[in-house]
Length: 519
Image (tube, rainbow, N blue to C red):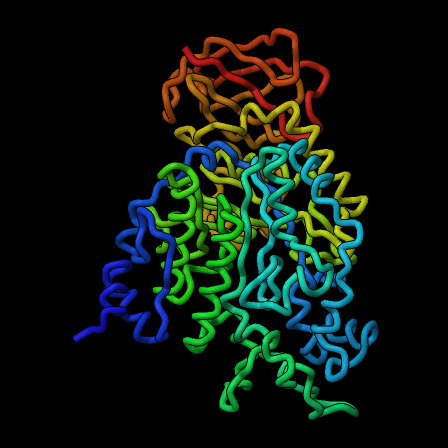
């Protein structure tokens, strides 16, 4: 016989919720609405139109680890003897047995952080949504957190509600608001803080993570924790129910208080019933504030989570192969995820090549511009952002509100077999080369087709997919324009393809766009 409390769990979320209630001793109370925290219920979710039309978002992957300005995963690697970030930490701050991540947090000042100014730049660059980091693996919340009361941005470091300030700016400039959470891995990711040097004068002297006074930041790991495996279990989710419950409470507060249009999670849906409950909560909160219409999105990096409804598949630093039937997203960065003063940034051409390629394949690009300690973009980042701005001013008509064509493109890369770089998936961007004028990408809007020439062709452009007897799709060309060019173009459509005589003056420094009017 089940208790009244457990019976209510069954009514609210089905058998998985009952299992969770019994395991954790506390019910996962989610906002009432159209979805329950079950995979079957979440299959009914559909991608909102705004997201399919948006195509481009900007992300500020920025938090206390940015204080060191020495790259991603700093809070973990500073406790790994021999790692470059460990060496930097010892030289800059001191030995991690005495000066740990808790002390780095205090140096994150955000003294030049101006979200209003930054959002103006992002909007001008063409971003339709903006993503604030909510919490990284470092266990530090970037909002006024009820369940992490000491280690949050309103109480420590800059002493500002970072998420709240970002949201206010995004709303002011009409961008959809997103937030990222990377918390589910934290229990294992921060385990290095409980170690010690293996060699040297301080060998065996425990790092500051072992101090129970800071267990709310570094976690209270049990004596039998498998420290021998710590090097390979950074992203695992082996954690006690008490941690899963705390994770649930913190991310639920984040979505309840800040009502994001998109919640990004770093990995697949975590902890089954807990994670599913959070997905349902995101959607139910959205329905509550949009008159019953779900305008929110949850992203997962696990394909099986998003096979039917449920979520958007996110490919970190990668591009999907072909044209997936469902919309998807690339999340990538112009350099390192957290700011790194030694980073080499992507060129504007590489960014624009990726954007066009991704959109042609039914995807969105969420691009991180990492902020330094101060909270203001550096000079090189501003130049990259400016080039994107200038390109979008001419070519964005072929990006926003478009849908994929029968073929995403043509050219050496588009036709490449998997063994030579044609394979789609996460972390494949390192294999990509800059596109040349031989590469063409397509999008559609209404009866028109946009053909992006990924380099400036000499004298003429030939689009073979638009031949009069095309095997891709019949397309009777009525007229052709070049976005950004006010003159008339000479063109022919025959068995060879659509041949366009190009003007002498480039309309953009990178990809240029032919607007092909269909009959």
